[in-house]
Length: 359
Image 1 (cartoon, rainbow, N blue to C red):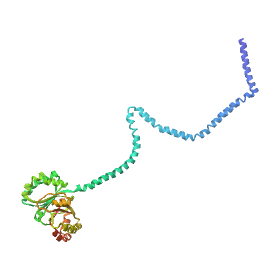
Image 2 (image 1 turned 180 degrees about the vertical axis):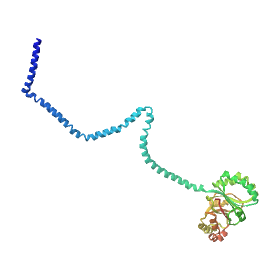
Image 3 (image 1 turned 60 degrees about the vertical axis):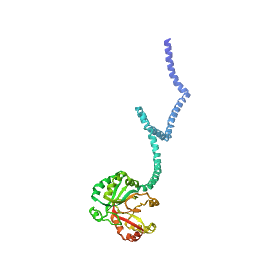
Image 4 (image 1 turned 180 degrees about the horizontal axis):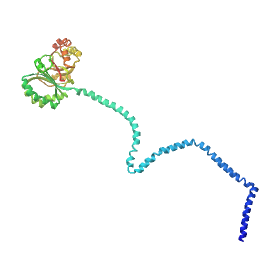
């Protein structure tokens, strides 16, 4: 039986080979089956052809894909940041506040740079407007306090060796200082190496001027205990005529005409003499540094601070300032002032001298 089965199988195998050849010839229907396979193959080939145009269309998406590739390229720095954060998890709170502020700092500075200049332009004018009133308020405070006058020495040696060393330190608590010491008597001026002065009326051997930061400081020194302690010695060695006044700052080295006067005819003085005399200063660049009423009723009438003084001075104190001593002397001896002297002596009694401020 096994042999018969083997023979049958061999016979069937031969028959299958022969049948297969016969069936391939007899059944053309099975040939179209391979044809569709070829068609499928053609379609498969056509399909790759379709993807060929597809890549022609994707070139447009290709640039879109390229920016997408660029986007990840831009996003790539983020992972390093994340990697840096991952690498240093502990400094994250420290690094985190640092990256967080930069964004507001970059965004805000732009607003700040735009807002700040505007704020600056708005604030600066306000500061200027605030400074302006201060400047307008400062001129009164720019005025200085002065004590000036004339004196004659009774004992020059004692004056120099005893009184001066006692008196000058009394100025320190009041921030006072000498800005003028000028010998008026020609022999004394020559001895002291000073320019020869000229004057009018009863003045004295010497002229002097003390300067203080304010009228109040000057008055404080004049009425204070320090100066009071040396008055006895002062009156032993000299005869003073002086007053406390207020005026404009005086430049170092300026030429000055300092003095006092009493008015005989105040109305004529004001309406006639002053309009005649004051223009004579212009050619010499002169001007008033001090005008101060010394008589209390006159000071009150003129709205001036009440003065104090010593010795015979006068109703009014005045100081003319010039650029230098020669200009002051030029005015005092010049033709312009000479032309008004007659009227001057009709309306007032003057005592005055040409001096020079310390340089």
